Image (tube, one colour):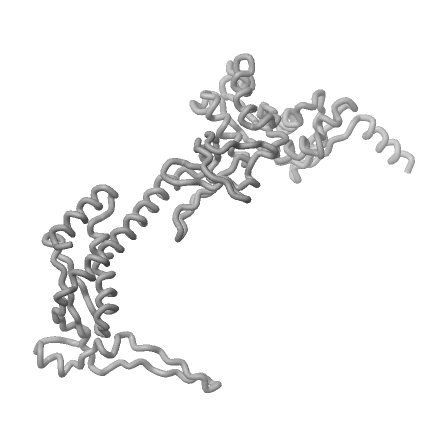
Length: 374
């Protein structure tokens, strides 16, 4: 590869991969300096210069002017252990001031004396090194480009293709890269088919030495939130607002909505005509139950709504400071208020940020009688 061919190849790659020419040239110069030292057994300081206009490559050795040779020092601790600190500058790359002045009379300590040492067959080394550096920069640029594309998408939902599977993860093709969907982040009991499209929620985007790491989930509560925003335009334009979303994946989700417009029914809008909107969401959630909750600024009313599907609930705020509440239900609604394995009351507590205790009127009366008997 001669100088013209090198520049032509460089310009082509810079344009195609959108890599800075200066960045590639700087990396090339550093790599060629290392290659020179390795191939020509050089101990001196070496600088490589690539002319960006002609592609001509020159190698220079340079000596740093010192007033005394620095060969490092030895430090002995209290126990007699010796630690050697290497010199800041390679001894072979130093020249004494008095010697330097014989070459350049007005030179000072800290300045350098350069000599061109470009080998005749250095083009072979340059060609091999150029390929390595350019390939490396292409990989780095593509990784950085992918990171830049996805870093703003953390917390967003995307649609990808199920590409691969191993014992712990699914790998989802997201276009320019693949995301990792751990099997522990799947909706319980759902099955996915290779090659099928799948909606995923991006939980983490991170640059690693092996490339971009993009972690995905279908179990995260944010997945439900994004599904609602996808299916219900009023949530996007602000007519309806989503206050909060809590979830126990595969069992139940609770979504609290409200509207500042009294003429708008936020729950009805989420359900859609003949249940079309909520139906699409439930289908994506593999049959997981979703409770639509009307948010209310009054904590007692909000807790009452959050305990849905239980009805006829009476709520007393027992300690507003500690955020504790008592919900009174009839016998028929007790199991609904608590839910399977306590799931309903747990989700209601998380949604309202209140510690909720559920009792029936009979239980309260019995407790009252016991207190009187004492």
